[in-house]
Image (cartoon, rainbow, N blue to C red):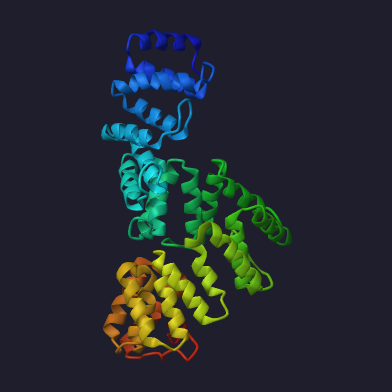
Length: 408
């Protein structure tokens, strides 16, 4: 709490033209610390400090213009002030520029430029920028998808106390994406996120204390109240026939393809990029599934190439399967390497090439690009190659992913 004596001292210095004192007075008026909150006076003092080149004041004044607090909302002016502060190395201004580009406020929307500014701010230690950069890398927005790097930035931001990054890191460990699946670490970061006030983390931990029947009822309730992640989890449960809780506990539910599809479509309205492939999987007709997967590919979801390859494989179209795996591997190898190795191993859609298969399986194992089961299969396939043994191609109506190694 700022004392009245400190306010008086800053006021005397500010009236004499001291930029730091003017900035501190702007902060006090902006948050109502030691003095009655007044956005207009905050803007007045920020402007005086900003004119003298005070970077933090320029950033705060830019935010006032962005939010429309104490002054008319003006994204263009906000961007101009952020740029002035960013040139002086202010990481908060650099992050805010990234946000404006990300949402297209006052500038033409550009995810690539957003990523550039997030990276600049992240390298200067801004936790929010680290989290947003991780999300962009995880989703492949404005940058080539790189889950390993995304996890690295989530971890850095989480250690700095960012609750969103802590939640994202918890989900990464929960799903086992780019890291070894760990319920213990997932729960650790979920609790940290909840302590930071992250609403979804709080709801997840609250559900976890319930019994199985009440857990499912709570999941339905949260989904009905607009929690998109809960709706997605419920859709997965109805599609798979089981619910997996945050602590790794799994229990069965009755499969309901129609309800799963309805929930996936609802989630798609909010976050179509993320859920469209899940929606494709529950389609009864392979042509409908392929149509949605093509739409996902056009939206820039690079993992859709692997899904299309599996659908073509189930249709018995081996060459199209191999073609899409090659196309996907060129952009995002982590999605397609395992299945592409299988194609080379059994000669599916291409000529048999054990050496290429060995190279790809080795890459999958080193980079941990697949789940634990597939990593075990990859190791067993390598032993089969050493013995000169080759599995049979998939049966008609089955995907290339159904190929299994013999027991070693």
